[in-house]
Length: 502
Image 1 (cartoon, rainbow, N blue to C red):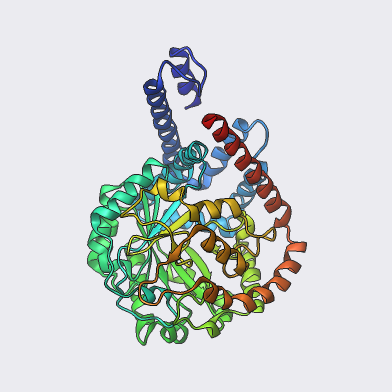
Image 2 (cartoon, rainbow, N blue to C red):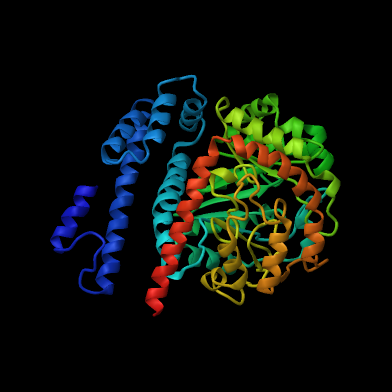
């Protein structure tokens, strides 16, 4: 692939990345390069498809030769290690993607998620960050509707009411704008997004180069919809489950657990990928963080699990449901333990801050668009100074609230305390006030000080525990280096922007 690119450059008598003749030709060149890169990456995926057990080590060997400076040596060593061990959990997980998932769905998922979003999309996104000197997200979370067929205890989404909707054209326009800036990953929440299942399928069909995921209660997943998922191949549900039957039905209503299990069994039978979305609370942390529960999810067919901690957002929130500092540490320990033992890809939205340089909201890696069109920095931060019906995405990324996020991230040097609301309450209030942002809850607007006051005690208690963990964490040097590099990159981008504007 590199050889072909070099030949193309020689044909034009220019060095890679330099101007050719004019702006139009430079853009054409960039397009050709992207297509060549995509072609090469797809060839690699097709090669892996034939025999992943044998061919993954061969691909790693090729990458080692290309990586002259050994920048990713540790990653290559890790992959080589687990691929040589058939009992390794990561080996088992990778192999399960080839045995348990429909071939067409897997190929589409790998192409969209790995090539279009994670690799080529990220390259485009980073160029746009440098050009416009603002955050641009890797993923956009949006609510097609505020309507939901359930009413879960403590659910912040219920605060929006049930009559708000983004039209198909509005959703489509967000995706179009996002792709122009390098975003190819779209996630639906709500409300219950599958209330709009027909439009979701149409968007999957229209934007076949994007990967779509939805946080869903799964009660609306039926045979017809599963067949549509199998047809479009680029939609993956993250199914909300709170534990076993007692814990799930406690928050979501009697009979919900059995409907969830039925939906998971259906998806598994169709060889469709899905995962679990789990909110740990004071009531269920010990259950969903147990080895037995991990095994339960794996047996059901889950390929990933996404953990969140309960946040008391909204005037009707239940602060008593918040996990204790000890329970949050328990989840921290369990998730890391099982990453080395269980064939389940696991993410913890708060406790994994050390891997992503703190808070990822405010467009740094993601943002949230509610069903009223308000563009919020985070799904849990219900304040905005922009709306998709009034501003473009780029204008929003450059708005006062999002620039406040960019200026202040990371919010704490201890990246186990990443959140400006839950872990550093004063930081959120400061940004909201400086930017002039307003509450987006149309039913019961919540003063930002009232919201953060509910998190003060939890933040103080977690600080004691988190600081002790951070001082001993193997991830601390890596996170501190990432923070340093991010600050250097931010300064570099700002300097370049200043020179352009001079």
